[in-house]
Figure 1 (spheres, rainbow, N blue to C red):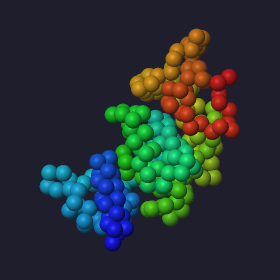
Figure 2: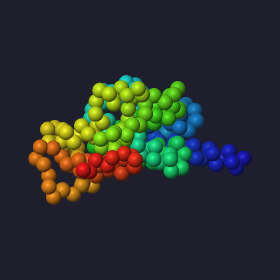
Figure 3: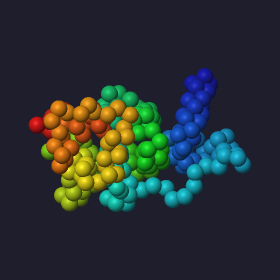
Figure 4: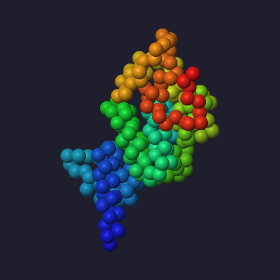
Length: 220
């Protein structure tokens, strides 16, 4: 009886935490196992309505997402994989990765919790996904890990989002604003080209401490 009570309390606590992060009822149901009707009654009322609209689908969204969105999604997914490899359970890994993502990007963050849940579901093949359909790929040039469609759909037709940011840093004001607006900016190198951002700048500016250890660091 005590064990069931503990499980119930944990599920309710998790449900509340997900609701605070902006999760849909369906997402909370998938993560906690609690009935959707019960979640509606417990977490929402006339003054606070649950998020509505079409549920995210990473397979449709990722190929058409903006460069900044792809970069943020890759940061979130890579941190999730690292947390899982460190021993976090899948649910706590998702929550911790999303909290870290929001701590890094704050109000400028483009990804809601449901989008993060959907991305992780398609990376792991769990919850609402019937199999892993998105993979993490390490860029051979910069060493950063980014989300890629299987069979190299994005990798063949497009460079990794972080390499593209290096190229477009001085050409696209949105990219420059994105890099310059982060909470912890990289220190300005002693020698900086006026035509493009130095290769060593990007990992620090985007907080990419999760780049593949076996890949090139791209600091040359």
